[in-house]
Amino acid sequence: MENNKYSKVAALSTVIANMIGVGVFSSLGFQVVPFENGGIPDGFSILLIWLLGGLIALCGAFTYSEVATTLKRSGGEYVFLSKLYHPSIGFASGWISLVVGFAGAIASAGLAIGKYSAPALGVDVAREIGLFGFELSIQKIIAISVILFLSLVHLNGTKVGGMVQNILTAFKIALILLFCLAPFFFTPVDSSIATNLYPTETSLSVIFSFSFASALVWVMYAYSGWNAVVYIAGNVENPIKTIPFVLIGGTLIVTILYVFLNSSFMSVASFEEMAGKEDIGNIVALKLFGEQFGGVFSAIFSFALFSTMSAMIIAGPRVSEQIGNDFSFFKKVAVKNQVGTPVYAILLQALISIALVLFSSFQELIQTLGITLSFFSLLTVLGIFIIRKKYPSEERPVKTWGYPFTPIIFIVATVWMIFSFALMDPIKIWYSVFAIIPGIIVYFIVQKNQKTS
Image 1 (cartoon, rainbow, N blue to C red):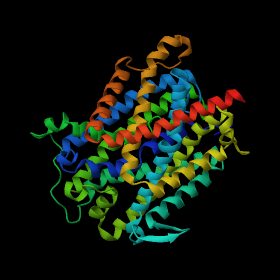
Image 2: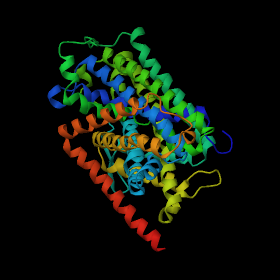
Image 3: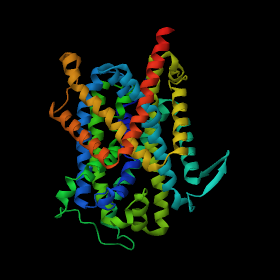
Image 4: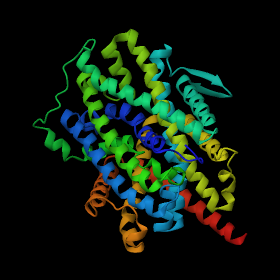
């Protein structure tokens, strides 16, 4: 990792770590609830939705490869949407990345770590303790502690941060592979009837229901992060080759792991045991290995989620840094230390993440994040048609595979998901709208002050 650049391996591990996190270890609990409660309690439909989520993310990855290598800057959608549409839309995207996207994902990872650590610590993580004038649950105290620890690690630069990221991601993949293979070698403790993973007479009606489309929000949140490398595009070695490789390769690897992992979960635990639960990994570990070793595995799960949070802490501040470079009002967040790390951007992200831990619930974070991030990804993929008109072929070193079909698939699937979710749970759509509008207002205020100065 020379010249303050992330290597191809570090970039790939950042994408994989961004994707594999809270979503895959919690989403199943909200998919297996009864159909009338918005669930899709059908084994085949659940596996299909995870495969479909991977295919949608892959179509997005093909498109982002061309967008990112044409525009060639760190900052992700903030940069892309500013150039393709209007700076206010890009700023709104950056605003969302700052206050919801990365900070929210870090907060949800922290809450999941707190939840997963319960069996290992032997405590009730919901128990509250008085701290600094707040009554905080042990779960939230653990979340805040991990956020602070990993933020301090990444203040030491890309070399240290990249090395830590590689180690954590390798550990996480090894854990997932273990859970994919464990049902073949261990008999679940107090096992119930295994879930049927083949199509049934109800599968077709489930697949074409609004519940299936709205359940895609959980899945797409689990896949969010497939585009993580575009946030550090200016900080990777040989971006023309690295970015497409990382986007497509990372998405393919994670899709395969997700389908097998969910198959494993459903072959061990019943829908009734998993329904409404956030810590599916704990439930499966306890059934596979019993109380004694299940506690050990819950500690391992907690540690594995460090990788997800670490990857978010790498990518998120690059958006704030670009905003600081573009707007003098925010120039402080672009300040770097002697090892090239955007210090204030990392610290600001940590503070917002801690605030979200204190005042938000896990389920609200996940659903609002899933919808809001999908909206800006949708705009970016739509931008490929603008790029094709605006930039000549020689300025587009990487071409979208399957164009125009792959971007169209991504667009149609995303619109279908958002529309269905709006019908099922409209209040969460308004949460997203209310999060975006302040960003646009702040943009025009800051822009006016910048012109005046």
